[in-house]
Image (cartoon, rainbow, N blue to C red; front, top):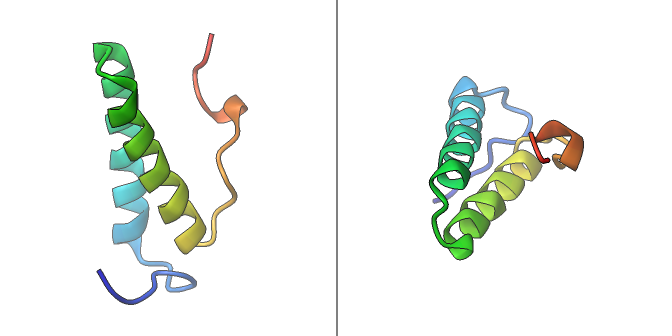
Length: 64
């Protein structure tokens, strides 16, 4: 993967982020091994950084 989505406003990057976040939610519901969710979470963090969004905090997730 090359290039940078930062500052381009590419809707594809935002769509990918939304899909990753949805995937993480589904994986959490399924109870898959933690390392799988951790890798998806890392991808979310890196993509948010790449497109210039702040890091997601716990208040953005449905954590009980």
